[in-house]
Amino acid sequence: MDQIKELVLSWQMKEVSRLVKSDENVLDVVIDLLGEEDDVLRLRALSVLDDLLGDSSGSFHRKVLVRGFDQLTDLLLARDDRIVMRTLIVLRKLIENTSLTESQLTRLLNAVYDLAPRGKTTWIGILDLISSLSPGYYSSIDGHVARFLSSDDIWVSSIGLKLAASTGYALDGNLKHVGRVFSEILDLNDVLLLEVAFDSMVQMLTTPSQEIIEVLLRSSYFRLSVLATSHEDILVRSRVREILKLMRSAIMNYYGKRPDDAIELARRLREEGFTEEAILLEQILPAYYWNASTVSLLEERTGRLPRFLREL
Image 1 (cartoon, rainbow, N blue to C red):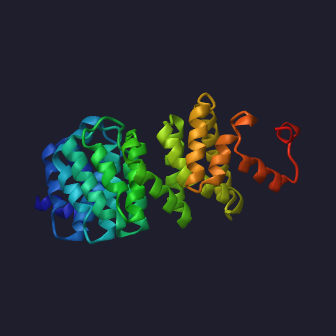
Image 2: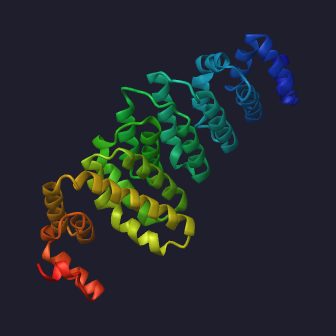
Image 3: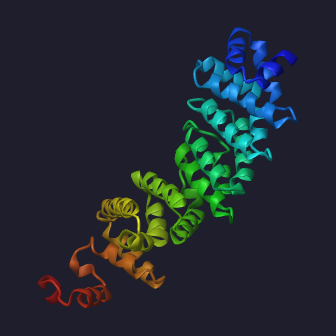
C-alpha cells in the first residue's frame, strides 16, 4: 500500500492505472485511499478512478461499484468541495448504464439529499449525476421522490422533479408538491431552476394524465404566459412558448373528447380564481358552451366579437 501511496502522491497516475489493470488487489488499495484523512491523497485516488472509469469495461465498473460505492457516497459529504465535485464526476461515470441495488440507491439519494443545499455548483453536479441513473423500477423510488419534492428548500425539491423524470417515475402520487415546486420555480425566475422545471414539464406532458393537466393549469399556465412575453432571455421565451404549445395540445387532446369534463373543470377553475385557465378550456368547446364572462372578457380585449358569438 505504501508503494501505491507514493505513486499517487507523486502524480504517477498512469502507472497506478496500469497496475490496477494488471492486478485487482491494487484496485482495493486505491479504494482504501479514499478513506484516508489526507485530502490530497483522496483527491488523487479519485483522479485514478476517474481515469480508469473513463476507459474501462462494464465488468470493471461493476467491480468498483461492489468494492467502492460506499466509500464514494461517504465522500459526497466531505468538507472539501474539490473532493465532493470530483466524487460526483466519478459516481456519474460509475452508475451510467448500470442498475443500482435498492440499498445503493437509498445510500446515494440520502447523501444527495444532505448535499443539495450546499450551493449551486454542487447542485449542478447532482443534477448531472441524477441524469445518469438508469431508468428502472425501484420499490423505494416513490418515497425518495416524495421526500425531495416535499422539502422546503427549493434546490432540494427541484431535484425531486429531476429524479422523477430520470427514473421514469409517475408523479401522480406527489402532484400537490409538484404544483408547489413549479409555482415557486417560476416565481423565482432563476435560469438554472427554470431549466429543470421546463425539462420536467416536457416529460410530464408527453403522456399527461388528467391530474397532471390540472396541476399544470393551476400552478404554471398563467406564469408561463407571462414569461413567454416578458422574460429578458429570448431563449427562455422560446422554450416557454414551446411548453405552452405542448400544454394546449395536451388539453385539446384530452378535453376535446370530454366536453362535460372540460365544462366542470372550467367551472371549478373560475370558482378558485383561475379565470385565464378557465377561458383556455372553454376555447376548445363549441361556442354555446362558453361562459358569459368569457364572452364579455373577449369583447373587452378585442373591442369586437365574432358574428357567431354576437348572435348567441
